[in-house]
Image 1 (tube, protein in one colour):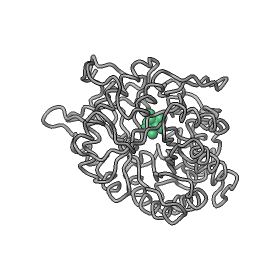
Image 2: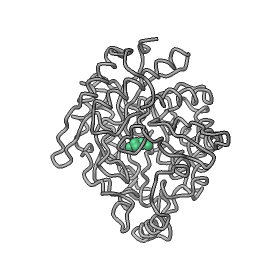
Image 3: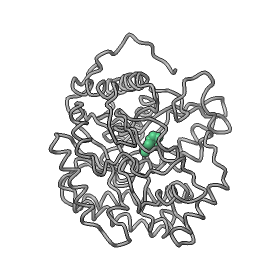
Length: 417
Ligand code: BGC
């Protein structure tokens, strides 16, 4: 197969905290400003997307993309517990309307890592009763916005805390994490700080799977009739040696969430790289393989493997809701996109129901604890002037989207590195 299906969605993604700027009611804003902090730098104005969304959405559409994936920010919509801001809900209505005005399908994520600071102060996800608060926010947001939403995801990568337990190249001392949590709790006047990134991964997983199902029902009770799914972080897990813990890792990190996705309208697959797993867990990058700015192996073929893994476990439509590479060298991004999409074509040829490819990210943005250094954007951003510079990879993806095929496929070398 060399062409994509006619209705295929082509897009780019962002997340509120990473692009909007001044997300001051978020728990992450608190974590960025305590001492010690885990963050290389604070998010501050980010890409000022909060004010510049119209130009950004028009730019995405002009490139030839037909889908914009973005998140709505709980801590703006409900800045204080039980206080919903109509003005902020209207802000997101304007964003959704801007998508429709440009012929772009809005794919909305209701939770992308960030919680209101009051939610963290109340114990966050680890306190089971708090799921009610999330479900109620989903219900309220969907009631206000549902008629304009094209597709919705409850959570972005809710399996990430479990995945992080396995990762070998994160080098943050446990004592720093503890001290940060304590300082954050103090800053919000509480005895604890229940943040998505800092909690007990097992407790979080149980609470969030239950919350996902309830949130789906709440979202669907509102106006509009659109698919509601969940976006899962997947790596191409490769077993090394006879006693590899690869299967154990997959059973812990992916399978519970893929089972939850199987009971949803769609699954979002989010993949960046492969991971070699030995008998002691993750082995880290193989010497000699090209690394990205994140320290990941440059491995675009991971997408095909992950799509196949996911499709075997969740027979629902699949969208690639994130895939991309952090690099200053945009020619590597073009190569990454070309090879990742060749993998999507292979999956389509095998009959896997892949319905869209949403690249991470539209803009160079705030890469969480790593700050602004990693460059994932199809579009560069000068964070002083907020000037946007469209990179060749953006035109490349736009050309693929317009033609529904990969113009220069074939001929170049394949492989891992
Ligand atoms: C997240 C994004 C993040 C990207 C690149 C995903 O884990 O959903 O927010 O920026 O990966 O690291």
